[in-house]
Amino acid sequence: MNTAQRYQAWREARDRRFGFRGSLVWHHSGSSEYLLRSYYDGSGVRRQKTEGPRSPETERLKAQWDAQRDAATEREKALQTVLDRQAAINRALVLGRVPLLGARIIRALDAAGLLGRGVRIVGTNAVYAYEAAAGVMVDASITTTEDMDLLVDARRSLRLAASADIAGGALISLLRKIDRSFERTRQDFRAANKDGYLVDLITPQTEPPWSVDEVRIGAAEDELTAIPITGLAWLESAPAFEAVAIDERGAPLRIVAADPRVFAAHKLWLSAQPGRDPLKRRRDAAQAAAVGRIVGHYLTHLPYTAEPLRMLPRAVFDAAQPLFETADPALS
Image (spheres, rainbow, N blue to C red):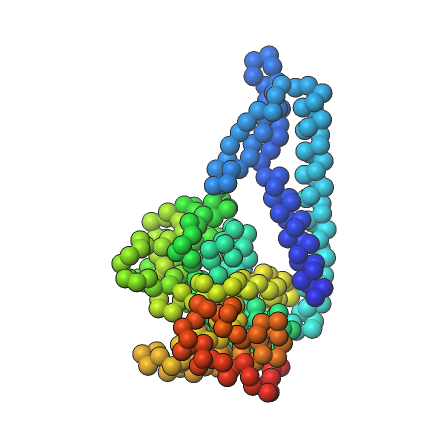
């Protein structure tokens, strides 16, 4: 809990410092001097406006802004030092679970304003959020992964808050800021780096399938285009689930995933699909069982009842119910 609390304090300090992006400087125009403010609007475009001619009032405004910016910067630095110390403790206790590259991608999505605001972490990486919330660890064999699935909500208009710093406001550009070797593959919903780590952009299948336009985040020529997949509407419509997990170096990160009850039910349904690869089906079933045990034994504030899970088809809901009734947690 110490890590989560300190991370929340750091996030608040970071957001406070981020609010001082831009500048407040004196600008000469002829024989006059004006206080000129540079700032970024909601779409990430840099803009300017004058606060008025130099006067005791504008001098006070600038002095106050400078002092608040400096204080925000110092607080963020101080809390970063605290987090660095906590990370060393977490490493010593072997608490880190989230692979480093995956953690960096999730943090970048968070910083860009996408995580939990149109993009959720699904697939294997979501399990780390459920583990962290419960304070347990599942068998590593079902969480080992070299890919990441990003569920994009086609119902929302998405824009990177950091678009001024990311070419085209594009997801592929964000990935390249993390690892320059990321390239879109022949499958235009997927990016891969030189080591074969995959990032897939996925979205729910609509009915009829041609009823919506392509789902993209940015405007780059090689931007990823989300692939529609049946069954993802359940995860899209599920309540959001947020937790602070720990990466392999002991540093915290925020993960926003779908409700673990819906995750488990969806994974169990996937494991029964005859056209799915047999190895993936077995892994789906194992993840469904593990997350069901986590919910049933540790996340007891999330009862497996129909009312909050109305997005699930009745047959899917009924089939998954036994996952949450097991008597043996069987967790690390």
